[in-house]
Image (tube, rainbow, N blue to C red; front, side):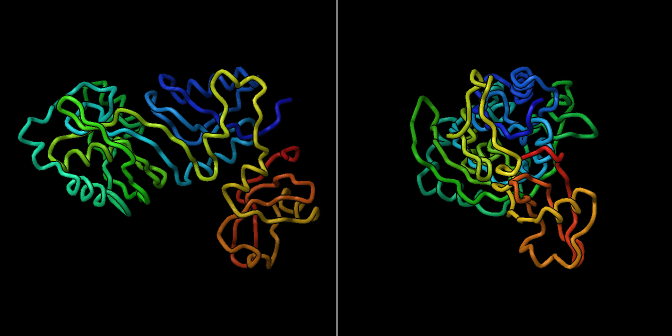
Amino acid sequence: MVSPGILLVDKPAGLTSHDVVARTRRAFGTRKVGHAGTLDPMATGLLVIGIEGATRLLTYIVGVDKTYEATIRLGETTSTDDADGDILTRADADAWSSVTEAGIARGIHALTGAISQVPSSVSAIKVDGRRAYDRVRAGEDVVLAARDVTVSRFEVVAERHGDGVRDLDVVVDCSSGTYIRSLARDLGAALGVGGHLTALRRTRVGDFDVADAVTIDALEGAPTLTPADAAGRVLPVLAVTADEAKDLRHGKRLFGQADRLDGALAAAVDPEAALIGIVEKRGGDLKSAMNMLEAAR
């Protein structure tokens, strides 16, 4: 029997997130596999995979903050806001006269903090049940609604000048749902020369780091995090007694225990280090928001 767990994979370029899930299914011999947050085929880096009952934790992982390393190319726009698309425009020589270090800094500052961002029309967001990129490929004109996101760090770490372009290597810390392609597009638009993404690597998802991930060729026998360990990296841990664990598993509330939580949710762990599930406040009580199977550790 396959044990539930969280697997950290360093996705290579050229594979979809679904490709990684399919390979994980074969490597672990189970169909019950999912991931917490899609990476585009051109992107590399950390993909958090849930196996068996640990897929129930993905809901709580997908919404955490993330870190990306990326390269933004100023001077060109593309049909997809990244290097996979067709080049639509190239900046002429006159446009570059207004692109200064101060101007780049101002553009980045305007895209830092709480911002409203329009996702790329070729994103995986669903529009009336269909992915936006499927509608674009079918010839539809797709304009997605702006969404509120938070970019807590947008930092240039290196620059290179090429023939009619300027590449910025950046590091971005951001909330879930932030599109780095859109940051590249919007920075280029603000500077008047256009921009798109040429490289993207996700290095962190919450407290999960790509340094701890396995490669796609090392899935067979790869170590996984226990549900309790993984949940403890996402939520506060609430230690419960064996009797409390039994009550939670049976759908009973822990009456008058809400003050044991500082936040709204916590990972309930029994004396044997097994994850019972995720508990939430309900009035003055605690109740299960999600329960794990009893064998989960």
